[in-house]
Image (cartoon, rainbow, N blue to C red; front, side, top):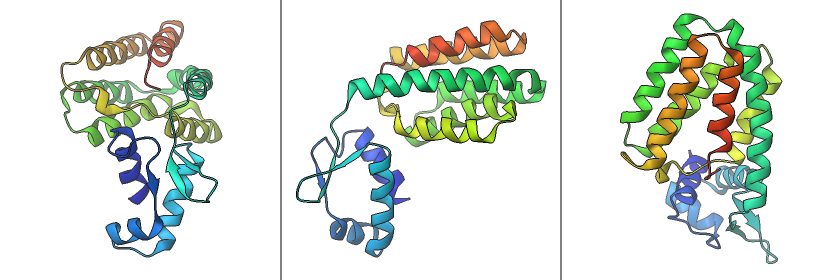
Amino acid sequence: MIAAALRQEIDDRSLPPGTVLKQEDLAARFRVSRQPVRQALGHLVAEGLLVQRSDRSLAVAEPNLEATREVRAIRCLLEVEALRLSLPNLTDAQIRKAERLALDLIEEEEIAMIEELDVAFHALLYGACGNGRLLTMIDGLRREGRRSYARQPMGSSERIDYAHQHLALIDACKERDIAAAVAALQRHLMGDKNG
């Protein structure tokens, strides 16, 4: 809960780069001991969202465009493989459910729900790949290379582009066309300028 709240504040720039986070302040804010705060901060450091300063304090990291590009490229490789392995095993019902998630994403306004629906959409399409380690790696990279869902308000060009990309991916999955599905996913992942 603490890591998720801080992650959201970093994403929506409520906590801009350079902001120093103090354990005692966070413990008081979240009404917990320092131990869960330390754990949450450790997760955010591992995700690259926080950096340790020379005085051992933690600060919100500056965005690293090269690292973002690297994560996006690795994600594309892994997610394409997961989709390629999963698509032959997906049921029609699973594809219909993914389509409903894509349609719900178009209408959703709450940032946390947009993220939840997007994660569920991709997880559903990859879930039948039969490779748990691959799915774990994808999940970790998605967290590390998160895009800001706050940059996708209703009616924005980004939101419209993502909606079209998701629906093109679903259409290819309905046709059981692995090559078209892979191409649609690559366009979606590599065209994502926000990470």
